[in-house]
Amino acid sequence: MDEAVEKLLPAVEEQLKSPETPYVREAFDRILTEPDIEEEEAKAMIAFCLADEVEAMMADKRDFDGSRYEMLLGLLPVMPEGK
Image (cartoon, rainbow, N blue to C red; front, side, top):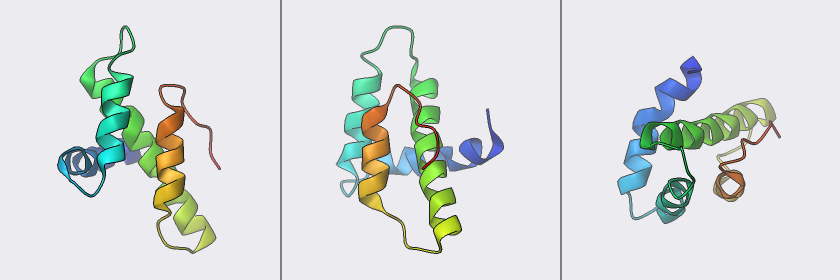
């Protein structure tokens, strides 16, 4: 697992519990309906999307874009590729 993704797993755990990010829980639950995808893999996929948004945020020198993050989550379980 990529180090950046691994470091974001605690943030994903918090988002799964938070009432402010219901779309994260929805994505997680939807991913788990796929055969052969376990909880840890689903969390890693979400962390990958979060890492992608954080990377884009830093590269573009902008604030976190929750809409973009939610859009990336909507693509799962197909893994998004960058911007």
